[in-house]
Image (cartoon, rainbow, N blue to C red; front, top):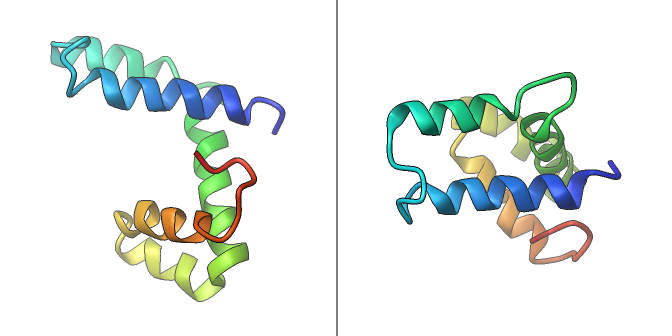
Length: 89
């Protein structure tokens, strides 16, 4: 968990670089995204943080509902963060 702030910053940068056209080809987007995989890379760490925050703040039923509609995770994470400040960006 010590790497969470750096992982959130790195993934935020990645998600901003694509629409801002700092990464312009499909191969470069895939290459950078694939670099985050590993033993416990940013995808895992940030995903766990988001899921555990939703479960803790909004309850297990909210988290389970996201298994059916994964895009809800972002909205529910933002909603959960509106009540706390720990690690939420």
